[in-house]
Length: 416
Image (tube, rainbow, N blue to C red):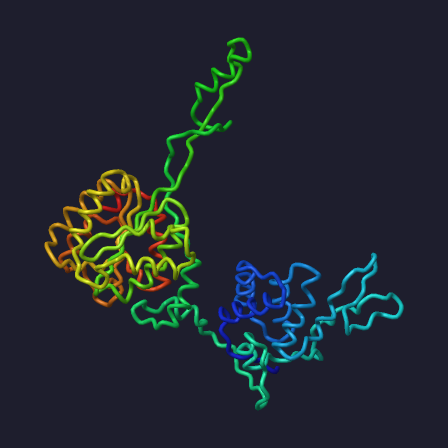
């Protein structure tokens, strides 16, 4: 039995570039359709051009008017449509009319039935290098295409997902930025001060019950029930921008603009002093992550300086936390714990913050190093007051950060 071989390719990059090419051709491609296409490639890797054609068409095409532009893009990229495209038919005044290039049956007038795969079915392998021609469709003549066995290794996106932020190049950071856009920060739910009517609620709404009884002469015929309104807890992000954290700060801060646009989120950075970023991230002027980070860079004067964690935490507790910003909130601290002054101040301020906040998550990228132990003064003083201690040194490790933020278990049990 002959093994069917296909070329090496990066599925994530392929899906993004193919979607961009289809948009230029007039097909309304959304990010959800690109994700659906990548999921189809993961579950059922294509072994020939026909399988790839139908996987892409079922994921990207949602209307009959999009079939023509899609076929032109596919033909430009891969140099010819597969014979299975003869399955496409359209209806004209109640009669099925075959697509161009498909001969109808002389008796019934219908398109021929799709050929079933068998020992005589010819499947053409995907040409190597065809994916690189996606941006401009420029296919230069060259040697005959060779084929490679489909590897079991992950794509570039999977490799970057495990790569340490401190080892990323500028180009890789741009790729990681697209992966960070898929992360969603969600805090636990809490009971709001207001209530809403619910026939299956556990509490009787006395005021609405009596108001309804006025329409029946004061007789209460039924009880109006209600339940609590649920709201997301506030999320407070504190990021260390000192020199020791510089390789990781550039990745962490790319999360802040997206988080700030999602709701009740407050963002701060600190090195020798505390700077509030929330007004800058929600500025109505320039939009986008890069524009927001540009404004942040111009507002932070102690970037890549020394570290005064205890002083920064004291300033946050006195100016913001005690006045209600940290009360019942989930506080996330991005820092390696290197304190340039008194470590005891870190412990005292963390103790104050723990009494205000619902949950404290400390993200330390040094934790991922082999044999790491929190022996530095600042980290050792802060750790007893943290509910979660995670590394967050890569995109995959940030998923642990998200889980720690969303966790709403027993706090006293975690502390023990």
